[in-house]
Image (cartoon, rainbow, N blue to C red; front, side):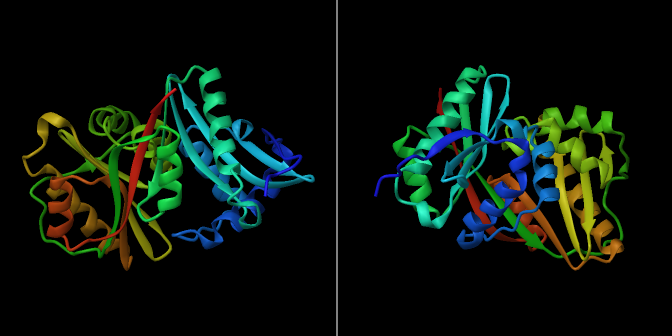
Length: 280
């Protein structure tokens, strides 16, 4: 059934709570169910360099029934979320929202747009392919346990934000948007412990009883020298000292050296995401 009278427009900032309600309805039956909140949304927007004013919403009879979140940085754009509430799915609204995001990004100077789709979400991937998107990379998330160690082979020292920014730019140039863009690093560093060695860095964070390694990077010319393994060992030991029970890694490149590192520390992959890109 076609949608009659549905309007796609930019969200007004006063509609944020309504958008969050719509998100919670949209993602309640997602492959990985998600629960949003005003605080979660604002942290996310800041971490990816986005702007709530850029969000496009689909409105039917005065209610938000879908949204798309285009994030733009120069000639690059990224879709930081898109969805339609269950009642209005399978009517072409997702495609219309994506087309609106592409047009907005193009008008803002972007020449390429990308997104990530969880592997197994076949309907979404089919839609993106039909719109001209192609796979460019694969990222994975993994969980493991903190581990106590007697030595690391290196002596990490506390890092300043400037230290991190220099190492990050060289270490994460071929990673996904959330990890590659400096906004995420700056947000994460504020609430985490940050360490560096010559040619590499690691960030560890505790949230209640869970631990995270948001960033672990080694500059290209220092790879293959055991620095990544030593930093991982140090990070897991630090999280052990913090008293956490689990440790998470998110959106890391699905490459052989990464897989070997995860195997070494007995991490198991929880999901994979396919990055898809399109020239505008």
